Length: 552
Image 1: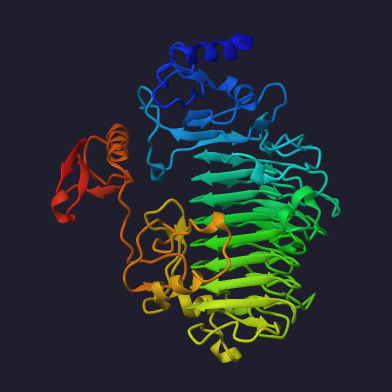
Image 2: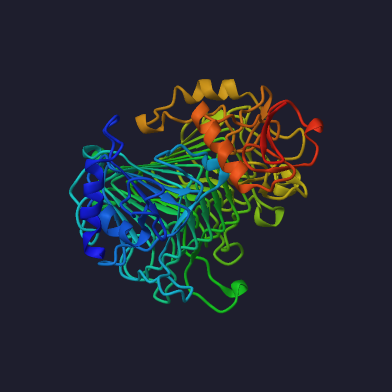
């Protein structure tokens, strides 16, 4: 039966219900349902056929997956995702017919794990587990990403990648000469540890000459050996970091994302205290001539590297934009031995350009000595430039740029050790936790970081922003909550207003999903959050009470 699955699916398309919008849609579940012809949720094809079907897909095809785990193409033990397709996972088992609207704030995920044999380690030691691009993944493509249609991926967890050989090919997702949007995806426990310090520099997402955007995604517990960004690495077309051709440069855009515990290691030992962190870019890196990165309403926390930009290393001739982010506890480990941290949050290299607006970037007092080489934000030399729209709270800044007027009066930049902004001063005993959104956040102490978001937006509008980055929504915080009229710096506004669903159909689908999955007793929000037993004490809104919709 396996050899006939493509024929079965193609026959289903000839009598399917998609003619009205001329969209080709396939439905999958881990074990298959009904006739397993992929024509509806009740007849979802079995997950074992997804890999081979997806690999041969044409641009414009759409694939919808129920929650659960999926194995890759049985012919390659890898995933190949063509240009221009839509792949949406995480749908609950309660889905009916051919409905595809879904509220991803509910958190559903379909899992692509590289641990195929169940031993706790990834089995893709030769190439990245997932390839999205043009040409053979083992070759350096001559193609340009602008020549291909956008690929969309929603609600997929990519985990347990373990590529051990060569540099910069990625240990989980390798994107080459492609345009890809990830929504509500998770990149977890992807690893490239090796005892050979010359190999293994692979990020969870590796980007070569591509445009990649991530919205509401989570990057946790990813590791790269030696250095260069455990969560993601951005490189030019063909990975040629000597090329200054702007057509070769990549764009990486991250909005409302969480980056936690992403680490660059070098020499590995048995205990964490003795481990030597990798050289630079613990969480992320942009290579020399790599392109441009955008962080918008993101949390970067608890990452590690030896020196040079634990949060991000911005290489020669590359650019980075930081707008309304929180960088928290990302220390370098070189303090005291190498004597040079070169920017625990941000390290900006020769002729780089970095832009800042409404960020909080601080470290614990013990990790910030306010010396000439030890700073949270480090602008390397006179050839680099830094430009601010204001309302930033920095721990320490070492600005060696020759540019005048880079940082402005509304930025809070310490002038002495006594005035250094630290985690203790800005956050007190507050901890990172979930506050109603998809990802975790942390709140500054009350009264810290007042910000005029309208003023920030006015300045940002004058910056040279790439067309693909003009989607940024500065009126929302990391949780997709609308910022209050009086907002604060960083990615989280504790006074933000919870989002409404995008349309009436999505509201009803979200409501059906909550009713199907919550207890028959109690009061729940439309996100499925338990709110107690008494709806009368809650503000006006729509709730699920004892399994039924109630408008209060």
